Image 1 (cartoon, rainbow, N blue to C red):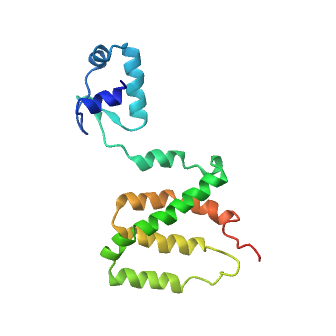
Image 2: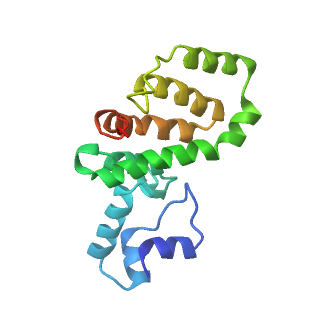
Image 3: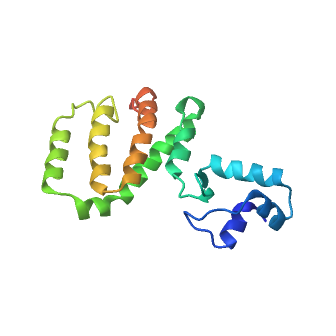
Length: 173
């Protein structure tokens, strides 16, 4: 059984202190070195952290931070980047209900102004990046979700990719 499965099976929750390495090694039937390595991996992925006077404790991992560390367009292939961009489009469709529940008249005015200020480049460009960021950033803000807003900020790297790739340029018929 893995250490994380043991912690789950024993009912550990966020904030709970994890037993000492020696106790874990004994209960799992492995060496302290194995436990220490497992704890280091759990720290690395944000599932546990060290607290003064408490030792290692279970923590609520920042899942987007884990993804953000790997969101390096220069090392991701074009298919992955395109699919991340498409994920963003799907996410926006999914948050439509939240937006409709939370949108204010002022929000609508800001969105209208953003759209009115967008130059017409539709014959050559699919997306005008600066306006995309402004308009869709407002949608994420309206959603009221800090996680969604953080995800949008993370996707700015993908916007840069899309802007510099042929995905923005319309193909001639």
